[in-house]
Length: 377
Image (tube, rainbow, N blue to C red; front, side, top):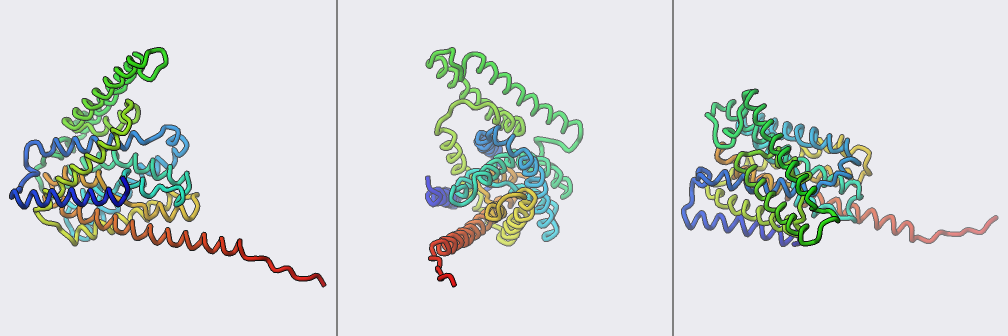
């Protein structure tokens, strides 16, 4: 699916949701019992998809960049965006908005990662960055939401109720995620020992084991969504990788469209343009700032493209859906911010493409210009 076709499908899904909400007088969807579970399932699908794109060889080759992307690229960027929102609007609840748009959408990265646009190293860094920051952003959103509710005098809600700001319960939550990842690792090792991916078993046995692995992966996704064990699922996604073929891309696209449809349903409550525009511009500015240390040592062209590489998509949409229950109005703000961020990215990329093409043309003209031979005196 081309970028234009994907964008048209996303817009159509959002409009369809909005029309259904208007026609059916659908209000208060975020308070439905199954709403948070559905949003969590969509988020889990997105996390598994993003972690499957990570190559351990690439991680080892760019370990410093990975560490910077997870710390500076996520935590510092989220802090910068959240700081701007709180300073401008004086509302502690706006802390979660900064975290919700701090990541870079791994689906949108594919549109930017063209061989004629950036170097192979820059494309690899951007891919790792986009894949790693999703699970970190999810965790930050969960814990920051509890902190924001406490500051704003809230009594807790669906998302914040999944964790606690008390140290003991935070430790229990962390141990539960570790246990989840360990159980997934044990299951994967048992499957490998039984012959999955090996040459000692026949093709039928390997196919049966692969289908069993797919079923177990679906079970892990559902369990993680039910208990909100997103850290454990993100870790499991690094190694629990049955052969899925095109299913991964199709399921992620389907999850994106479903999430966008839900977003359209909730947009019936209205949009908040001013906070959304400020949030979008703050996210773009934060990307410009944090890209400086992360892209150090890269060619100037690569650094420019990565500096303007902020894009938001499925993770920001789903996080907005999840946060709407505890922070009413989040969807209207984040939806506006996503539009602003992606429009700025498209315009900046177009300018950079034009400058790069002009530079190549000047270089070609200079190379093709004949050299004047003067007679010797």
